[in-house]
Every structure is written in structure tokens, then in C-alpha cells.
Length: 373
Image (cartoon, rainbow, N blue to C red; front, side, top):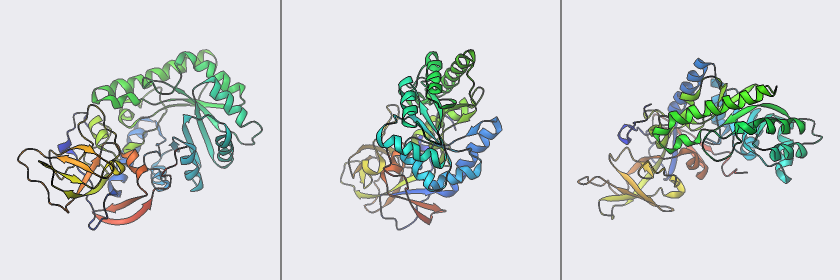
């Protein structure tokens, strides 16, 4: 899994015949290989795996991860946690600074009464409000404090972690640990190792501050697919990668996915060859999403068309530029597109076509599709 991967190395899952395109196809053999590989890697380092379900949004895949040895599941929002809890998955961490008011407060109370629940906070205000929302509840979630390790999104600083920890205690809640997300690894292949180091460093600084204040925590959690391989060492006790389960074009270039075991592709039909030097597919932004990092050209890779670049996506069109001198495919041909980012692709579709060796095994509804709160 080298950060110097090129599109020429990407292999898409084999597509079943007769698909109504666009369709999102998932190769189960490749999924199982990806799940086993990450579990074995972290087991070998003595680091727990709590995979993020925002990628697959499905109890079906969460159960596979748990069966392989994951200690629990991570989600981004309460809606994902509710879907998993309804399916019998009973250990969930909401890795997000939930502002617990109104319906969210009621939903938190309900979830905490049904499963082992943990939630994130990154401020005194967030911890205080969480305590207010859950006052009098028989069952309470545990809390992890989020640290900003360089992404500049959410998370407090190591210098303020003790203040937040005291607010958690004052709110009558139990502090399980600290966590971070090295999201700045996504800024380019040359940023991955630095982001992994930042995760370890910020978490270690937070631990030092907590220990100095006589505050002990059990869990030190980091999370991102490209950094998991590099960051999983002391003081980290848990990793929360998500995209590794399917892989995508971005992860292959960042070194987070094996380009030979990418498990998800969007099946698309060539609907036009009228464009000069290219073709148009029926999988546009509403199938492929619009994620396009600045360091990666195009909106996805088309391994069936070597050298092709998806130069533009509209709602239902993807414009493909082909290398000069290349004959375009025929109208009606079906090709596999490896999307830049698998997570939004899954959330855009109602169902996944599960396959083995190019044969349909099952049509799986995306159980938590659209659950964004």
C-alpha cells in the first residue's frame, strides 16, 4: 500500500451482468480480505479496532467487522447509532461533539438505556449540556474528549483537556478517554505520516496533562484509514478507521487501501460518445458524489478505460476524457468506476449490489442511508 499508487494499479470489482445502472457494486470477497487485514494488523500491535460505520452505514458489514474481532463500532451521528442498536449491535461510540438538546437529548437517553454508548465532547459547554440533558437518567453514556490533532475542524487542545475533563465530572458523567481524527492526512500522500505522528503527539500531550491532574482514562483513540497503519502505537489503544472496509481511489493513493482489493465500484453505462475524445457515463454527481481532492485529477477512475479522466460530473452525467488516439467505448458498454470517496457514494444509493466472482449474492438496502442527525 504505497502512497505512490497510480490509477493504472487500481483493480475494480468484477461487475455482474445485467445491472440497471448506475449501481453500486460491493465485492464480498474483497470486503472480507480488507476486514481481516486491518484486524490482523491492529491485533498484532495490541491496538483495539472500533471501525467507523459511516462508510457502509449497515449492520450487515458492522457484524462482519465485529465477528473478525472489532471491540465495537464508531458512528458519526445518532441516527447511525439507532440503526445499529435496532439491529442488536450493542457497543457504539458517537465520535462527534453532540449538542444534546431537544430531540437529540431524548434520543441519547433512549440509546443509553439500550446499549453501551459513548459520545464525544470537545468543550466545557458541550459537557455541561450533556449532563443537563441526561439528568436523572438511569443509564448514562460514557464520554471521550476530542482533541484537534491538526485538521482544524473539531476538538479541543491538550492545554484545555483538563478543563473539559473537570466539566465532564461536574456533569455527573464518566470519562472513558480521549480521541482524535487525523483528517489532515487527506490533504495529500505526503501528509499521511505527519498526520499519524500528530495524532500520537496530541494524544500523548493530553494524557500528560490529565495524569498531572490525577485524571486517568482507559481509552486513547485515533481514527482515519490512511493513518491507522502508521499511528497504531503507544500511547494509542484504539483505532477507528472506516473507509478501509471498501477502499476507494483516494485511499489507494494515500496508502490506506490496497489497490488490488478495492471492494466498491459504481457500474455505469456509456450513454454517449458525442463528446470529442471521450464519452459520457450515466453515473453523475448523484452516484459518484463530487469529492475531489486538489491533489487528485478527476472525479473517479475507470480501470476499464486506461488513462481515462472523469473531467466533470453533472447530476446524471460523467464526462470522460480519453487519452489521445484511444478509441472510445461503444454506447451501451458498462464500465466500473472507482469513486474518489466511497462514503458519500454509499449514502447516495438506496441499495448495494453484493457480489462474489461477478455474480449477484444479495441486494442490500443501505439501512442508515440519509441518517444525518
